[in-house]
Image 1: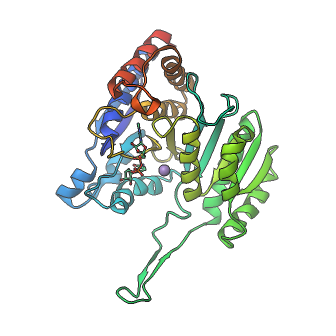
Image 2 (image 1 turned 180 degrees about the horizontal axis):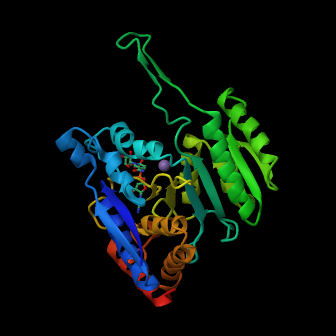
Image 3 (image 1 turned 45 degrees about the vertical axis):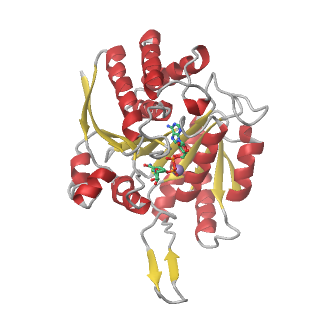
Length: 357
Ligand code: NAD
Ligand code: MN
């Protein structure tokens, strides 16, 4: 029996609602596989925890998480707590301390769904955004000065290290080399962000010589437009922390919205646990209604299976999601339907049993 320990942080808003459905899928993985066990441990670290304790997680929170093989994360964020607090005290420390330097965000139009982009088909929309996940624009360096004067000033430093840039660029090249198009697109803004971005382009040039992969350098603004006008061109896209975040939300919109797309925060060396979550947030506007789409969270379990080197289980999950979308009438409101989070979760779980391994 192969046993994995999974730390579960449902978080806020729709987080617990969609995590609940994804845990059913995790259980189904054990059943269809036979020799597999996931021991889950839930952590109630979220904005309510903050309002009670004055912090998002206990002082030894990271130590507690470190003992697990993987982390399943819902989403954090509540209108009662400033977003920079919930993000900087929970999710960013996990990503940074556990060197989850790869944020893997597949953008793929699933069977049974149509893209809002007219004339774009399933073959046209199938790429992966590789987002740098530990440094770049999401840095804690900077500050406010001259507060209370007309000269008040905010400085936010972007941190790009050679080490941090090289490792994400290498990862992206390795991934591109394994995929069919063998093309890597690099998102920068080298004309205006004149230290960090040319530095990235330089490293891309150095690293790229070792791979049989075509390299495209695009400015982020033009690239955003190409995401809409010619997405079929893309295969693997590597981007800094902020650019990758924005591009993957944009990519999500081209394949049906934020309720669908997953995200893996990966420490490729497996020195620390990796973390799996949807790309969306806690969606306070629909929380508590039981109507959030659980597909993004469930798809994140598929990325978890890939990471644990059980790609056949990862594929089974995506197949089951596609079966439901293509061959049943079950749709949550974001997809134009009337079904609940639970209806969608249950339908996917029964497809998993039906398809089997
Ligand atoms: P959001 O992703 O929560 O919501 C954006 C829009 O998408 C909303 O209209 C929402 O209803 C919709 N949506 C999101 N997920 C959905 C789902 N599964 N099914 C159906 N519709 C869905 O982004 P936001 O509104 O910018 O942020 C809300 C809160 O989430 C903030 O507190 C923010 O800081 C936090 N946030 C957290 C994370 C994270 O935990 N990783 C990521 C992004 C935002
Ligand atoms: Mn985002």
